[in-house]
Length: 260
Image 1: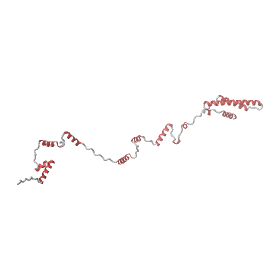
Image 2: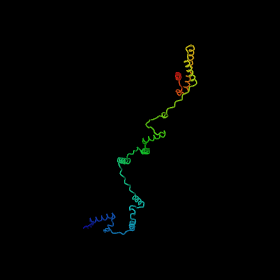
Image 3: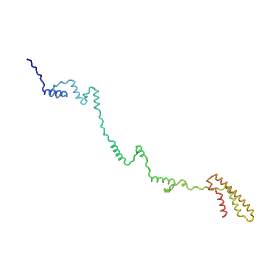
Image 4: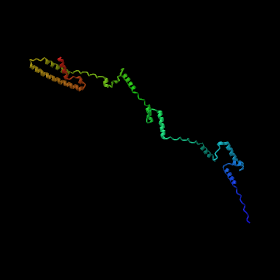
């Protein structure tokens, strides 16, 4: 007769669940809870654990990070923690809205002030002196004219006067005295005219001879006058026209004096 095999004792469902729970709590680091429930015996603290606990109590918040294995790693962790977060960026406004708002603000500030297309033009307009009013300019000009002309009143409605008008009438040129040749010719004519008045009717031959002589004298006098006129014209054309009298005018003057 074969011997019967012993049956292996199987853990019940509650036991399996309890074991899995204990393992889960141990993995989660809940040893204190297991000790309180009596599921785990309290172990004596090792020197390392004791030093670690004391260091945490003494250092408090300044305790090194648990993930830092060296001082270099701890320093990097501290640098990361000390980094300041970048400020949040303001939302960008659309271009159209910005330009419209700027235009409104500028209009409210400047009101009716006129500006140029650029800053340089605006600066030039602001520095440029304002144009004087027309009335004040005219008054200042009238005062200056009174001071220069030494007159109490200046007629503004008189109109523009040229320089020649302001100088007045030009002085008349002095009458040029008759030269020696002209005086001789004039005396010869007077002599002949006196001879004509005293003629007699008796001596016809002598009268004819005298007439021939008179004609010759008149011709010579005319030639002399022409030469004198040419010389005067060469010396100063235009200046002596009014001063020197022509031979015909002299004859008229002589005849008028004799008739009188």
